[in-house]
Image 1 (cartoon, rainbow, N blue to C red):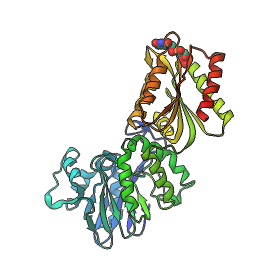
Image 2 (image 1 turned 30 degrees about the vertical axis):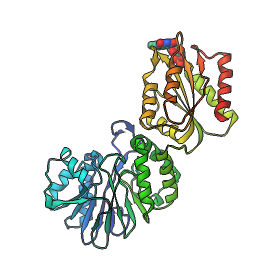
Image 3 (image 1 turned 180 degrees about the vertical axis):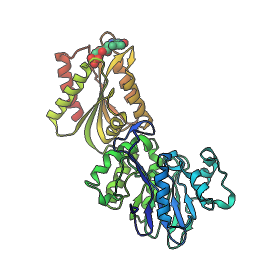
Image 4 (image 1 turned 60 degrees about the horizontal axis):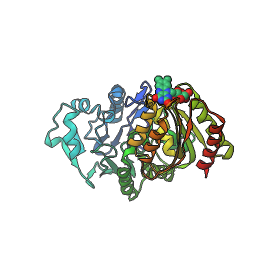
Length: 398
Ligand SMILES: Cc1cc2nc3c(=O)[nH]c(=O)nc-3n(C[C@H](O)[C@H](O)[C@H](O)COP(=O)(O)O)c2cc1C
C-alpha cells in the first residue's frame, strides 16, 4: 500500500495499533491508537521519531518504502516515552551511520532506554532555536520541557510550515487509510472528545508548560500540525488551539454538569439520576452521569474538565469512600481540577461521612464554588431528599 503523505517530501511512516486494549495500560482505546512517525526527504533524509515496539515490523516496512534504497541521515528523537522510543535501538542497529538528533536532556536519559552508546560524532545536540538544514527543508528545535516529560522538544519545518508537535495535539484512535483532519468526517468536532480524554489524562497536569509551548507556537506560521498520535491537523487551526488554550488553563469549555456516583446497592444511583432529570427539566445544558464502578474513569475526568459543574454522589463505605470515588477524586487532584462549581450528595445507613470527605476534597481544589449544603440520604431517598435534590438543581443552574 502506498505510504500516506503530508506532502511530496514529508511521508507518514507510522502505524495503527488496533490490538491494544489499554493505552499506557490504563486508558481504554476501543478504536485503537496510532504511533506516528514521519520521514522528511530532501538532500538529507530525516526520520521524525520511532514507534512503539508493538508496531516494529510495520514501521520498518514503511521506512524501507520511504527511503527507496537510500540510507537515512538523521533520527530526530522528540522525547523518550516508550511508545515513541521503542525502536531507537533497532533502528540504530539497522542504520548505524544515522546521526541522532536530540537535546541534551534526551541524550542524558537515553541510556535508560537503549543499550547502544551513541558516539559523539553521531550526535546532533539540539537546543532552543537550533536549526538543522536537510536541503530545502530546515528544522528548528523548540524546547517544550514538561509537556509532559522533561526532555520533550518539538520541531518546526519552515519550508512547508509543519510543526512536529510531539504528543501535543495527539489523540486516541487508529487512522486506517486517512491521515489529515481534512480527510476525516465531522472534523474538527469529532476530534475533541478523544483528544480531550488524551490531553486531560496524559498531559493535563502540566498546563503551565503547555501554555508556554502555545506561546512559542503562536510566533510560528503553521500550515500543518503533525502530532505523534492521531490525525495530522491541516485546517481549522483556531479550533484546535482554542481547545488547547482552555484545557491547559483549566477553564471549562461549556456549561453542563457531570454527576459522578458511587453506589453499593443502587440508591445513590437513583439520587444521581433524579438530580440529572431535575437539571434537564430546568435547562437544555448537557448532563452526563457516570457510574464510577463501571464507566471509564478517564472519560469521567475529561468531561469534568469539559463542563463547568460537577456533582459527587457517593456512599459511605467502611467509614470512608468507595475506592472508585477515592480513585476519581485522586485523578481530579492529579490533573489540577479547579475553577468549577460543585456539590455533594452523600449516602450512609448509620454514620454517613462521605459528604464531609467529598466536600473537603472539592474545597481543596483551587477556585471552587462548592455548595454549602450537601444532600444527605440515609439509605433510601425520601421526600425531603427529593425536594433537596430539586433545590440543588436550581443552585447549580443559578
Ligand atoms: C460493606 C459496606 C460498608 C458500609 N459502611 C458504611 C459505613 O461505614 N457507614 C454508613 O453510614 N454506611 C455504610 N454502609 C452503607 C452504605 O453507605 C449503603 O449502601 C448506603 O447507605 C445505601 O446506598 P446505596 O444503595 O447507594 O449503596 C456500608 C455498606 C456496605 C455494604
